Image 1 (tube, helix red, strand yellow):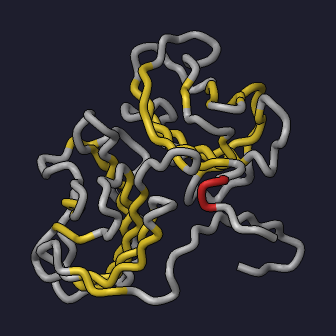
Image 2 (cartoon, rainbow, N blue to C red):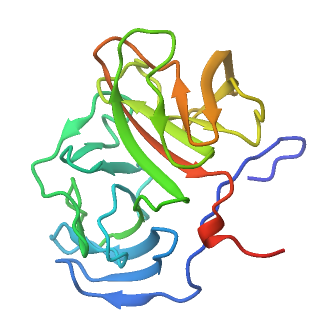
Length: 239
């Protein structure tokens, strides 16, 4: 990831430099958790189980996990509060959300939508909504030019959106980065994992001091979103 003349963009979350063992799930994990930011990193080896301890002490609403011994894509496990557990897997990552029959995450463990392969290594990243830092939700489209206002409680810096019923056809999760389009009415979207340049379009997203509106608004379709703050004062560090 260092080709000459190519611009790159990265998003980073801080966790403790050392991990601790966690045996709350059916699969033992090593966990580095930043509870103040609602973020943890877990590593583990598949053993036939499917629950992992996350170390956040609050239920995460997004867990992204990956087999380190395989070239497959990531699982996205989503359990936005009060709306059950859905996921996108390697085979269906670009399509409709799949309803999971497994429990929603609780304060101690995540029940993964898939079962990790015995003996293979994995990494997982869990995110819990944290006031002033991150927010997660969903909305139903009404075919207007912009969605209803989505309240986050902060100005979003990074925003991810995906249609549960695949509003974007065969595309991936789309994300918008305020650092690349710093004016209201972000015109460029980036697709996770897609080997394509950023695409344009008038008013894809409108970012406000406490939320956003999006042009992802097909009538009666369901959309999930995850937002991260421009200035997370709760966990900010002095320079």
